[in-house]
Image (tube, rainbow, N blue to C red; front, top):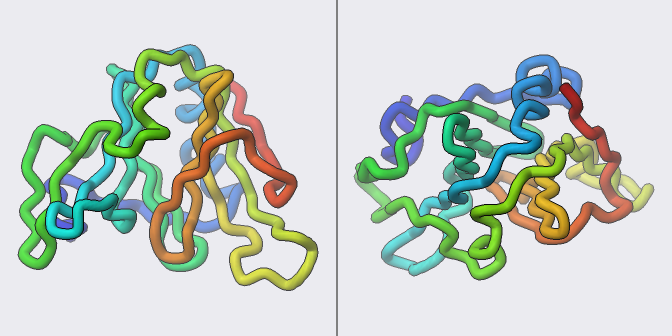
Length: 172
């Protein structure tokens, strides 16, 4: 399976905090202290906008984590599989990798990652379709960026997580 023409990218979908932490917690925690080199997003060249269905890449030099959401609660975390220098060859969309194409991402490269958290959406106490969906929060103190499930695609938030998240800080 090639997702959106991204060669060598094969998402591994997981559900639930315990499964994600068991599969990736230690390695994610190991990113703390590393310096961010680039944040890569897939750009829709026809619409001149972020193509939020494709993975978000955080390049820390020797480690690159690739985060992707789909459906209501699927989260894929892969490591070092995508080369953003390679062209994307999708037969339907006209896509390309872009480093920090959004203004809020442009100041992040060069910052050291202070900590990383698995964030679990708890909503506002009312019945919420997104309840239990997971996000990944990167603390670059004072900057913070969260990749969350925007109900079948990726979303980005800037600033520390609010009270609608249950926070699970990852440690080595």
